[in-house]
Length: 189
Image (cartoon, rainbow, N blue to C red; front, side):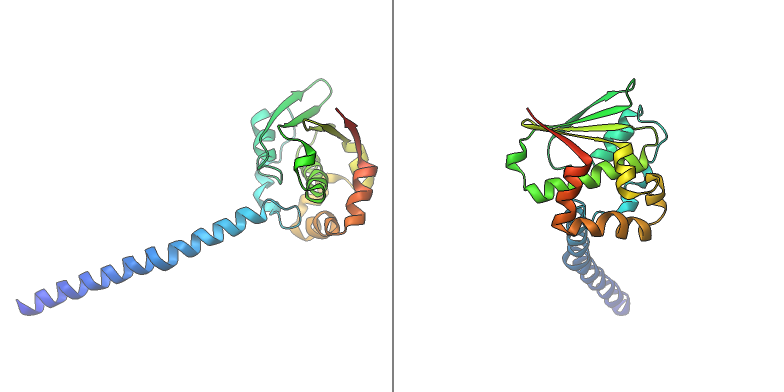
C-alpha cells in the first residue's frame, strides 16, 4: 500500500513538473517564435515566400484568393479593401491611410515586393493600383517583367531564386528608389 501511494505521489509530482515546464518554458518559446515570424512577415527583406505560395492562381477574378494574398504580404497591418476590375484585369488595393503616415522606405520596398509577388502568383493580373488616401501607385505586369528580365512566375520556382532576385536587392535604397521611379506611375490625390 505504501509503495502504491509513493508511486502515485511520484507520478503526480512528475506530472506537475512536466506541466510547469510546458507552461513556463515551451509554450512561451513557441509564442516568441510566432511573434518573431509574424514580425518578419511585415518586411519584404524577411518575408517567407512559402507562406504565399498557396495563393498561386491562374485567375485574378478569385477575389478571396487575391484578398488573402494581399493580407499575407507586407503592408497587411494597414487597413485595406480591394476592388477588382475583371474587364481590364486590374486590382485596386485601397489602403485607408496616408503615405505620409508610413515610413517611406518600408512603403516603397513593400510596394515593389507586393506587386512582384502578386504578378508572380496571379497569372492573368495585368495591373495593380495601390491606392492610399493621398496618393496612388499604379504598376503593370509588363513593366515589372521588363524590370526583372524574366517571366515573373519563374521567380517563385524556388526561394533560391526569389531571395537573390527579389528580396536582397530591396536592401539597397538606390535600387528601391530606381524601382519606384521605373515601375510605378505615382499620382497625388
